[in-house]
Length: 70
Image 1 (cartoon, one colour):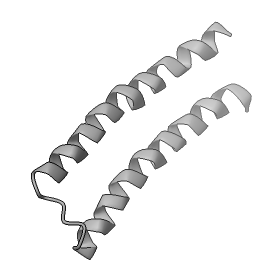
Image 2 (cartoon, helix red, strand yellow):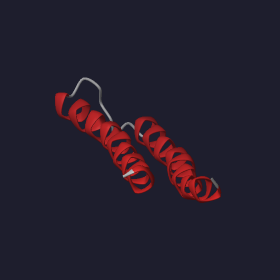
Image 3 (cartoon, rainbow, N blue to C red):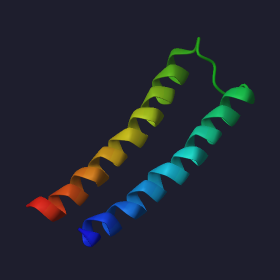
């Protein structure tokens, strides 16, 4: 059980603390006026950025789970 717990700590740190910086960066981009929601291209890349974060988080979680259960 201790091994499983210790394997999730880096994941939580990476996506918890990293997520704070990620969201902070998105807020800065919005406040700076670099993101224009009326621009189709901006909306596309905004979605890709957010989906990409969760995509890598999901892949990382699946790999951790597969290391224990496969």
